[in-house]
Length: 162
Image (cartoon, rainbow, N blue to C red):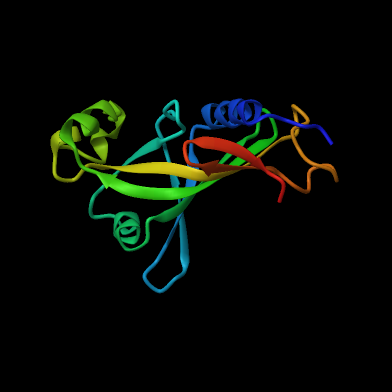
């Protein structure tokens, strides 16, 4: 089995995220059911924190307020790779952050822009990552059936054997 360092796997993770324009966010409803939706995230921060813009009145914001555990999944068809990240989400309503994480083409959805009461951010901080990249032969034996798993312990990422 190929032994990979957390740094190598984090590079593969970041590359897959950057090659995908969209991700799927899955949150948990009040009744305990998962709800998934397509979202357009911003590029990840150095520590893989990811911000996503949305309406504070959306179903996903209500679900995050009830249960902060969410999943973000990315697919890179270019590299035949996927990343599935589990972690905690929170609502970030700071106006300077909303202005920083703003796409002008979103004005059609949020006519008041980043300063309006109808735009907010979701801040996602991962604590578990599953990653597989078949183009780079980043998968465990048997071929393609088990992803590599990274777990955040304190401030460090470690490769999980499970």
